[in-house]
Length: 203
Image (cartoon, rainbow, N blue to C red):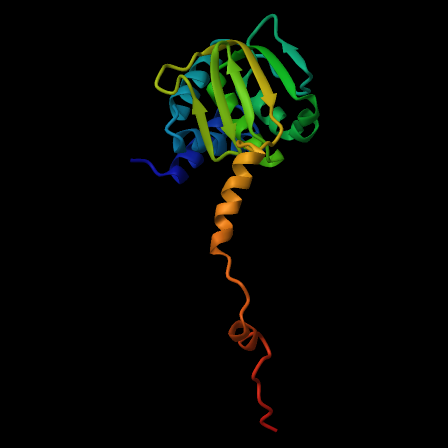
């Protein structure tokens, strides 16, 4: 079994050989490492994309807006991913971003996951009708994790979620009230054992 370090290094070098700068290649290596860490087909799709890249043209999107559409060739997932990662602090204000015609979207997803960690927010993604929740780069939850990922996504919808508790105030208050039973009241003996108490002067 290949180590994550081997995966990252090989993906980085292969990306450089495929024509990307060392900086972009390094980001790609980190993203492919992440996919394999989560048991997602990063190496497989990167291989397929590079093979496809030799025969077809892909569009680069450097400046991302609320709605992004490539009418000719699909977007390159690597350039798109690096742009998203670089611009995430600005994109966070958009809340919802849409991309149409993206090649090998699972590669792009890995960059979005890393962006989730940067802004400290969960990101909800829809690839056509498939749903993915990216949780601060800690895990990737999907309703099609055991199915084949598409090579071309017609539409990718990215929603940046606000941080909210996953429980009601009533549920929290009930649990907190129960936890109070473990609180220890301060007794005279505890006061005497407090810092500074009972010290003697040896001078």
